Image 1 (tube, rainbow, N blue to C red):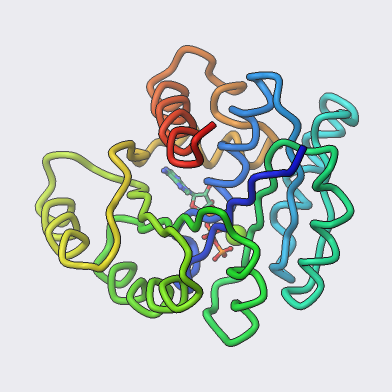
Image 2 (cartoon, rainbow, N blue to C red):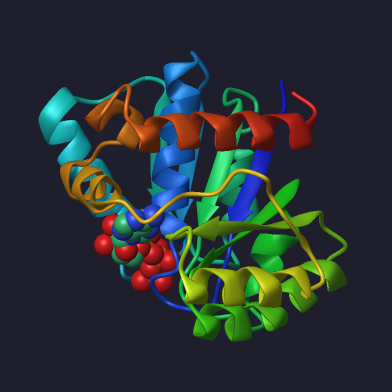
Length: 212
Ligand SMILES: Nc1ncnc2c1ncn2[C@@H]1O[C@H](COP(=O)(O)OP(=O)(O)OP(=O)(O)O)[C@@H](O)[C@H]1O
Ligand SMILES: [Mg+2]
């Protein structure tokens, strides 16, 4: 078995990288898959999420976590790739040359874009890097607010970027922040809520892109 590797990158802070990683990971684990998470962000939010999670539900065989440097990511992945279905790499809010080490490992690159013009401006550099690394890259619209003017403006600006947005989007919902703070995915925090539905749809779309 070889893992499929999903890198989540966006130089704009707070766009939803860690939210995307924690929610996709928990959706896959709920489907019986094994997941490894690597955090290359020195802020360490994903590790704190996992600390909360383990305090609540103990350690899980299907969820491996480690911090890693961008340069060390290849070695880190080698250690899990025979025993893990999916690897997620969470990254810091910057797009420097170190990012190439992370991108070179990716089977799929996801770029969250929060519903603000500043996020769209920040996105072009990251898309360039992913394209130079010759990796499939998709935008994931996050914190969407349907029916708002800013939402429409951002959607128009994103459509002009050089990457296809996924059909699935994540709306602005308090449960995303609540679940993150509790070490949960939204599918665990509110099993049948709207957030859970959109995360399941997103996970299905990601798996389809990976051909699994
Ligand atoms: N769809 C959403 N609805 C509501 N809150 C959200 C949503 N997505 C993210 N958030 C909240 O916004 C904050 C930033 O999200 P997150 O930590 O995932 O971003 P990030 O890109 O990882 O940030 P950083 O660049 O600092 O690593 C968090 O408090 C998170 O809970
Ligand atoms: Mg983060």
